[in-house]
Amino acid sequence: MAGLYAHPDYYEIAFDFRDVAAEVDFFEACMNRFGEHSNRPDSVLEIACGPCPYLLEFDSRGYDFTGLDNSSEMISHSIGKAREHDIEATFLRRDMADFILPDDVDFAFCALGSLYLDSNEALLSHLDSMADAMTPGSLYCIDGSIDFAGGTSSGSEWETTRGETTVRFDIEQKPIHTTEQLVRQTLTTRVETPTDTERFREEYVIKTFAPQELRLLLEKTEFEHVGWFDSFDLSNPVESCEPGTLHRPVTVLQRQ
Image (cartoon, rainbow, N blue to C red):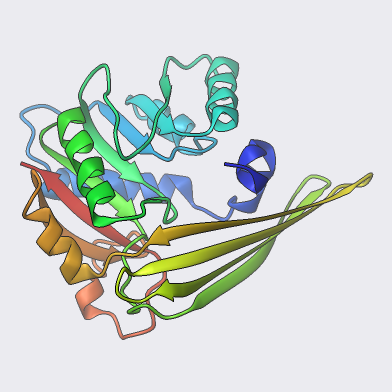
């Protein structure tokens, strides 16, 4: 990957709006309500981990952390972050559609719509890899990536500042192939510092997955659908939300 994703420091600033502690609270609430473990889960895997914004929070709560990403820049950045904070963690540069972990994990998640796959076959391969990497009864939470809006165009933009660096980020998504449910994502970034201005533009073609389509595909895997919850809130199931009001719906799956 190129563009913003090749600049972990800027990427961290762009997506600094997250309340990481609250999101990890939600993950733990899911583990407590839906998980099937004789012991407390003690290991987590982040898919498309990027600069690993969740690393410090999970470590502070006693979890062993594994981050998987296909970007060498992100993996190098995350290794440096772990060393800086004296954290023992595992980082692997792998394709999310086909990978093997050295040890099983008790919980997994993919944040910010980062499930970048281009076909049903790629999703099934991803879930096969996930099943092989997870302990029975463990949960996999996917933030975004499911198309509840039904193939419509969408877009959003925001600006975030940290110190003397401001990152302006814009994302647009447009359907390009109706029957294959392919969309083109266009990401535009402007980075301003006291001495320079940088611009990045990148495009990706990915497949979207409708809710019922996902359920049908799950029948071919070792995962079961547990539920959908909006905005990292177990009291806010997607089924109870008004159309067009979803913010960050999270899909909860369970490894059988």
